[in-house]
Length: 240
Image 1 (cartoon, one colour):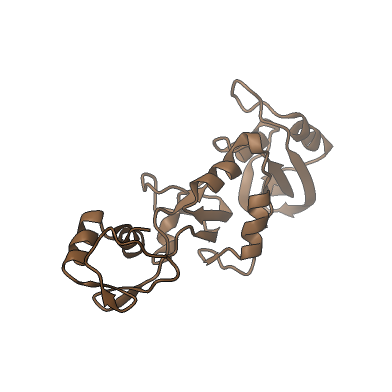
Image 2 (cartoon, helix red, strand yellow):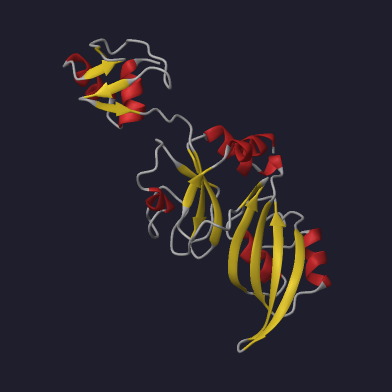
């Protein structure tokens, strides 16, 4: 990798600023001043210091975030604070959320700068499962399971694709009967899970994504917490 590109990726400076620092003699490679922006280095092996501060190259990064309600799954803050605020200071350039969770939805969100993996996980043609825990109004039953399996009309040209619905239980609350369920979809349409339940006459009261493909939410992560994926988790995701 060129030295000026390394500074751009690892140091968060522009290519012009990187070249200026190098030509000023502010950059050392393995303890020796280097004044050539085009100098080739081996990231992860060569030691690069700028004004005495060592830079670490992180390349592609993968984080699991336990998204709380109130944050938007976007790099743009048009409708509220971005989930990227929760990763302030995390190594990695060009991070973005893979897929979207509604602002009021909680749970698993993968944050990365690996565009290829992000595309594969969200492409409908890949048939990657996304599983949600939901609490919905009324007493869900076999009719709901059958409707989800057959694909419900959510008001678009095509019905929602086949989905799995598992009923975990029901509770009597002050506002009426509430069902706890798990729904697994392979698409990622706008407000899809909420619209599917609305199509069978149920309102989603609470929604949380608990897994994406082979990756389950680490329940030890507090809401708003994040951690890097393990090598094993990343390998399974890639295979998925």
